[in-house]
Image (cartoon, rainbow, N blue to C red):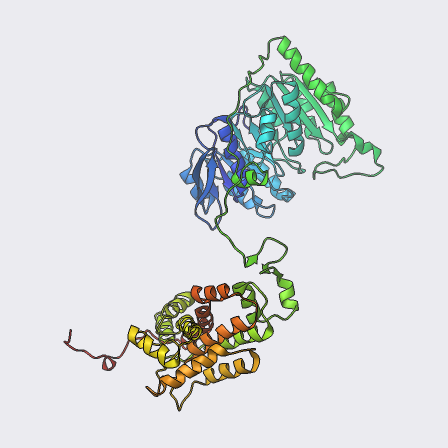
Length: 610
């Protein structure tokens, strides 16, 4: 066990099992104390590497992340404190590995409930190799104005209130982290504050004892008096009694052992810590307090009297000029995190994203205000979900059924169309699902599946302006624009597209009005006089019928209808639908273990024409 000071303003630590809050609190304390370098040298996160972005005052810094203890210790040879936030299940293995590193001198084990057999092995190894263990079940320790472990001393406001941003004259050791915070407050009220504080941990077998740290404090010149807070259970306090009786402690010791109320209970009582239970008279708080007092410690008659006892001892040392009270210094202001400042109402900041279709902040997500559970319990279909997420309202069932029909009818059109072909070639090249899907989707455009919006746009404009089919078609011809929604490479007057017939039948049966579809049919009648394959295709059927859906359901304004067509909602139906087929083709090729595709020579025209 070390015989003197264990922390300084240059102490650096390695943090095991990353937790954002305690790491950031350490860095904020560093800045508050005026440290030049951060106290966290690196983070160890098994299976991960890279860095974590954190703040050191106003500056954002990158703290390196290592996948192993060995690699972190190798890079940061001067970081001699290991802060272990592993669970009680894995704390032993990681702590033992850290103890075995020559660069690590001190380990803080935060986990509560580490198996006692494991704790004893760690303690034995540490003592044999002159290393220090704080914990298990500890919040850590602090040297005021220099270094702190994890969440020790709590928030910045508490740290400033307790004057921990600069060193005082008192050494403090306790089993309890929570009571340590309380005592730091007491020391700030009645003394010039803390110099070093340690919480050894509340488990039955702590890695270091109260007397270990009291003896250290005795050898630190800046510490002029010592305060000890013990608790019932175990015999740790008696090692301090022995040290006092042997004259090994030369500084005033104010001590109190909590748990005197245990005698009020008829049976044995387990207090907060695993070690806080009395196993007999010797382990009672009363017996320990009497032994400490008999050995020369200053022991009040109750915990309420502890503050007065500390004050009286401090005042006596000041009067004897053993202590020269520390002059107060104004600490720098640590910038507050934006999210905390917003929550407390100190600042306001603009949002970066606006969303009106989904909210995942409550107990369950909502689609356009409709709870997920209601969607499931009401047997909503995919068309209903699309109506909520795309149109932000619940459309009538005949509308959502039409949406579902469009998706089913457009899901696939065989392996020879350009989108499927691209997806197949990509899948056979060994690419993943997303790459294969995207390669197919990228072919969607004016010539393949992307004409639904244009069909709706042109049919609507022509109909609303009262153009006859002849005027509409001939005006498009003069502009050099093919009529979207008309024409097919395979289908013709005598071989109609069954998908178009099904959509038209559904519209005539269920829609209140189908004026745009009927107009598109008159256009088709005219174009068929020009060529046998200028039939209405599925783009034209969906585009014209969707105009009828939007207009006849009485749920959209004219401005909303125009916006829906302009933004590309209708093409979105084809993209969504065809994704199903493209995924199917990708899986099909992978399941069949098809080799890399190479286009045959005989299907290429090689020519010198340029």
